[in-house]
Image (cartoon, rainbow, N blue to C red; front, side, top):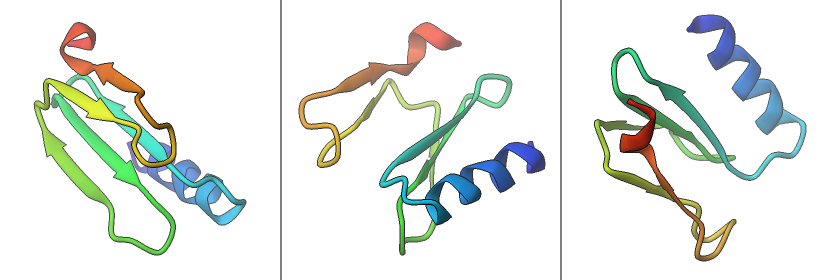
Length: 64
């Protein structure tokens, strides 16, 4: 997981505005946004892409 977290930070450092790191084993979603602390959601039903991806919603429960 630490390798994936480092890669996600690299994406942000290179201009990504939003990143979701999904851990299906722990049923967690880590949300990465530039200049903000990493947000961790425990077993969320969905994840919204707003405001970067307006109207996009991922049904995370389908991944577990």
